[in-house]
Length: 468
Image (tube, rainbow, N blue to C red; front, side, top):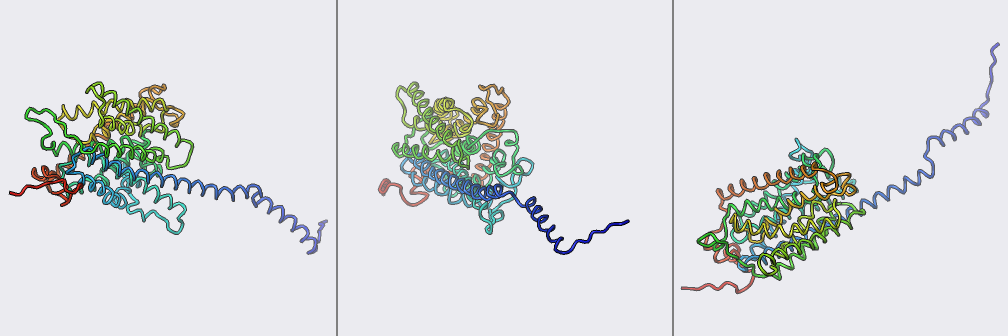
């Protein structure tokens, strides 16, 4: 016998309501979890906004370093070409930042091609989402921060080529450094900052250069070396027997002000390279300043020992040498190691300036090659010596039991950057020399580049012309 149960509509409704409530309880999130998720979104947005603010402020500090470079270069050279140097420093951003927007940023941070070059994001409008600007606000801030680094690389070149370079030709040099040479090698080491798909071959090897001892400073330094070599020395720099003659700068206090501005701006250069507000920025700032102190003591004591007196310009360059050296390992080393790294940089810069000036007979008016090229290489190698595993994601330097592996990677990066920057610099300088001329005429150099290149003076009434 088949039994049937007849359920009226009222009974069905009474069964359906509890069942629906049970299903809703299973499907809907727990109230506590819902509150946590609601709170997480503002927290994430607050962290993003804090990162944007920190990176922007750091970028502004790095931009202010341009004033420091201008003061150092002008103070360490002669008064008759000071205005020309200032103009070149303006140009490095006036042209360079625009070209980095339309060309350089894409080559540096676009999607990787064979580990060598980036592709995509040219003009930045292609990747900015103006309708959903929460994340795009970070994108444009990151571009701004990277653009001032590109300007720094170009500015280093102007110091090594000071007092005898045609202004129109320098425009081409600066433009191609910021648009092509710096971004391509920068991609090798830093492309992965925007994602693994943009990683270059050096970064994929585990190369350590946190804020750019090699990526920025050595790149600019080696191009400056190529420029100084192709240009030849300033008139009167070397005597009939080839002996080096000092050409003193016209304003050491101005140069000193520039060094202090650079030291100040470096607190954006190194700590700002976290591009995030986190617990490492204090350590990085401390390491940065301690290395500068070490550089001062290293250069001061070396010059005192060699010349019998503590040299002013060498001591100032020692400060910069320490800052350049610590730029690569600032995130990875201890404060004590930072002092040592800066100290060695200070010694190296004095010896390097002497070697380049007296042995190689290459005229580098402000010591740009030694400060940025040589000490940038030293700082990059020092990461392979002093890296503390707890500070570098497990990477250990030679002195912390890491063996030669990391040091080898660092050496490869230093060598690759030298070959690229110096090689491309030579090609660029010889090409511009052949097509447009790179150096001013002898008469123009004697009168000074302010009058001959710009028709005005940095110091009114400085030039007195005799009329026959």
